Image 1 (cartoon, rainbow, N blue to C red):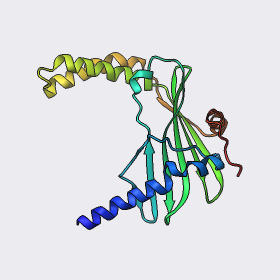
Image 2 (cartoon, rainbow, N blue to C red):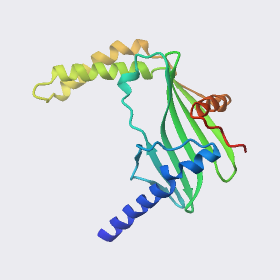
Image 3 (spheres, rainbow, N blue to C red):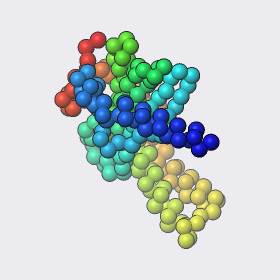
Length: 199
């Protein structure tokens, strides 16, 4: 049992070393976004058959950004896909706010096909939901005594707060774009002094 645990930890460490920040020079040569030096490596790698997904992510405090109308793109995560132990795809996620709307850009490079793909998700309700959650936390704190709160009180507070924000919500809350996402991706990569590798 202990041996299995140690082997698993060693494999995670080896994957992190082989495909993590130490691999950034090669990434930059290919025009693929690097992994941040202080990013967290997810030890819960996802393995399906002969495919392993390795995840790195940057921790961000979302509350500090909700009142700004524009947020420059933040590179928040990377997934490296290994197929039969060989790196086959890298997927990068960027989060930003433009014209008061939160957006998520996903940029992927398939190393086997040498081809880029991307998608852009516009979330019209993200800022409203964050404001609602901040108020909800404050109200629940006020309603609690000694850090404890009954289920009935919690549900009542949640209903009251959500009813106030519900009229501001837009439907559908999310819109996906495929066609123009690479143009957006190019401007984001340029801010990193990178470019997409030619297919």
